Image (cartoon, rainbow, N blue to C red; front, side, top):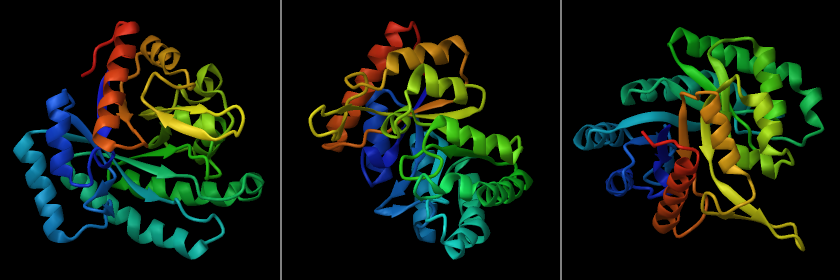
Length: 272
C-alpha cells in the first residue's frame, strides 16, 4: 500500500520533515503546514524553495491540504472567498508540486445545520468541483468532527449529491470515531467506493471523563488493523497518510510509522 506522511506532523520545516522521513523509509508526502503557515499561504520565495527541496531529495507530493471550506457554514463571505480565491491559489501551487489531489472540508457548524444547509453546501461543492475539473484536479472531502461532514455517512451523502466524478472522499476513520461513527465496518461501508485518500491516526477514550487522546497507530481503539485488511481486500490504490496529532512530533510520528508497518505486516501488505 502506498504510504505518505503529512510533513508538519514531523516538523514545520518541510526539509527537516522530508530528511527525517526518508531515513525512516517514507518517500511520499502530504503538504499542509509550511514554515508556520498553512498551504498555500507562503511567500513566493518559499514556493520556489519548496520545489527545490522536493527536487533535491527526489520525493513526490501525494496531496495538499489547504483547509478549503473549513469555515463557518453561515459565513457566506468566507465561503465565497475560499471558492473564488483560495481554491485557485491552491490549485496553482498544487500543480507546481506535481499533485492533482486537494483535501477539502464540509463546512464548520453544529450538526443540526446539516440538513438545513445541505442544498447550499452541495451547490458550493459543485462549483468547486466544476472549477477543479477544468484544471484536471481532484477534490477529496474529509470527514472532520467539527464540520457538518463529520462521519463517512454524512460526507458520502454530500459527495453523492454533488454528482461530480472529481469530488471524492478523504476518509479519516479516527475523525469518524470522534464523531460517534464506528469506523469499520460501518463507516467504511459508506466510504469504500468513493475513497481517494485516507488519513490514518489512532486514539483512546477515557471511560470516566470521555476525553480522547491520540496514540501511536495500532495502540488505540479505532480498529485500524481491520480497516487495513478491508482496504487490502478492496485493492485500494490511493495513499494512506500518517497524521500523528500528538507530541513529541518526531518521536510520535516515527512510532506511528512503526505501528503502521506492524499492522501492514499483519495483513500481508508492504508499504510503497
